[in-house]
Image (cartoon, rainbow, N blue to C red; front, side, top):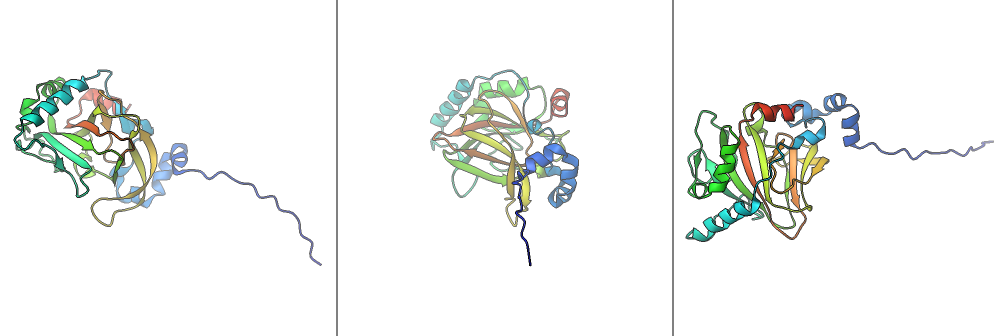
Length: 250
């Protein structure tokens, strides 16, 4: 004759990948085949260093927007924005590039080259003033606009930024709100094409208007704008100063 005992099953809380990473980042990385295969996509730890305010200086975003609007009104076609994809949600205006022409997409950087202002960039005196004040070598500079209620898929830009001592990406938000977020992700599935990954969010951050931020675009990252307004950032690829490197690797 069988007797049955009542079993008490505890509902154990499932530990998220973020919690595992915080608890033991080295062990977590070593157990993920994507991090071993693509080591440049490993996020910085602590997570907050992946999206880091570099200065307390607040730039005048109204002056920046005025320069954009004036230059656009002077343009013959009245539209300076170039789409970065088929969906027309992610647009670019180039301020500085290798040859002074439009460059909406990333290309490997020639560190020996003096990057040139575009026709549009040459009109933007305040933006030029900001770039000069950074006291370092400036490479590709663009203004990027994300449409309302839109998202940029998970991807990595490590092909350009893998050597952080040579080049980093910085953002100055020009027009944003609390519903615009940048995400740093943990890889779940590598891309079959077009550098589009599947990932889980480890860090979600809103970048305040007018401040300069370091963003770790080697790590998997995504951007979403769940608001009804455009998100516009000044995006600067530059050689990091010793001060910036100390802040990032503190």
